[in-house]
Length: 461
Image 1 (cartoon, helix red, strand yellow):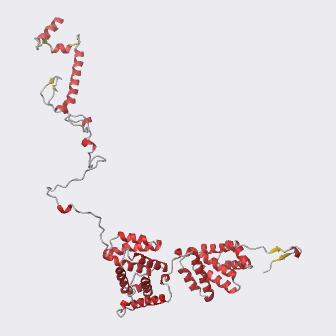
Image 2 (cartoon, rainbow, N blue to C red; image 1 turned 90 degrees about the horizontal axis):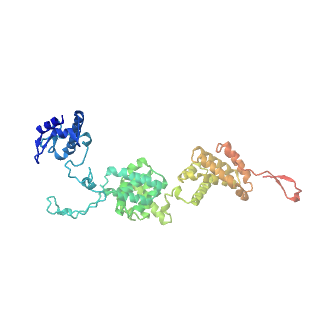
Image 3 (cartoon, helix red, strand yellow; image 1 turned 60 degrees about the horizontal axis):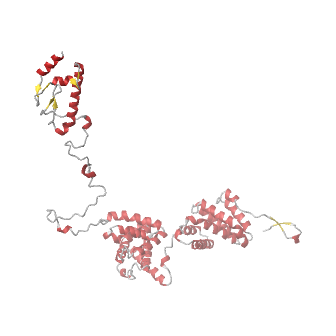
């Protein structure tokens, strides 16, 4: 049986280089000198086919079909083109399919969408190519700057008005100058003073004082003298319209003109230049008011203080002095409405407790009932009109309670008068019962000296 297998192998064999006959069947049936059965032979053939297919898949992307391929029975066929099929795991593979890459990142790590170069890379100045068809000799000496478009008349008021209104709150002229310097005012530069004055006409006296200071500080660094004159000329022309909203506009504008001349913003000949050529009665009234104030300044009137100063900007001692003068004027005149107006013009609602304190101390130091009744009526009126709030009224009374011991040194009957004043204030509804009960009282009984025999005496008032 072995001889028959050998004869079959020689009949089906081929002669190779050394004249030896090699049988393909023997190769398939014999491995390492051992003869295999038909089932083992089939397993070995399947392994060979699988190995050949793996080799083909590995080299398909590199050889592009130029390598070996397998026939239907698993034999290697050379020279046949087989379309390679890439497995699913290779679909998103970004490695070079030609096998020429070195495994380095693309563009040296500086690639990617929207990337101009490697991180930290510094580019050298690019030299201009004079042979470039887009070369322009005039662009070599260009200087590029950020340009702010000039404000037109429509945007001017919307931009500058909030700046002036905010200045009325903080009072810092340097901040206003910095904000105006950032704007390109252009031809609207001369409109700044007229806008500030028109806003101040509808505001408080303290705001008018701030406006005068603002014009004095802006003249020179931001605005010129010609801009100031043009602005006041515009105010005089528009007085007929300003009177509709502010009836006292001619007198107020005249005070602004007098203050501007005093601060050397306007020339001394500014008013004289309008003589004989003013037709509007409001403009004539404003110029007459300015001329009168300037004549009075020669006699000692200080125009710098014509508007007064806001409460937060005044010294405390000055406020106390003005409140005392207000109370004395009220005691002499008896006009509570004028006293209310003067107290409101001081613009110190946070300091009204001082007014209450000074009024009660004036009652304690007085000798008649006139001051007692008039102060009660004034506090009642101020309380009903809410000019003095409940909190300020309470703080004023509490301050008197705290200082009554020192006041009693100068005014012996201070305790007795204070008790009467507090009881009357409660009955008129100025204070509540809690504040009335806090009123201090001195004991009515006291021991006299030993010479009196230790007799207890009642203190008489």
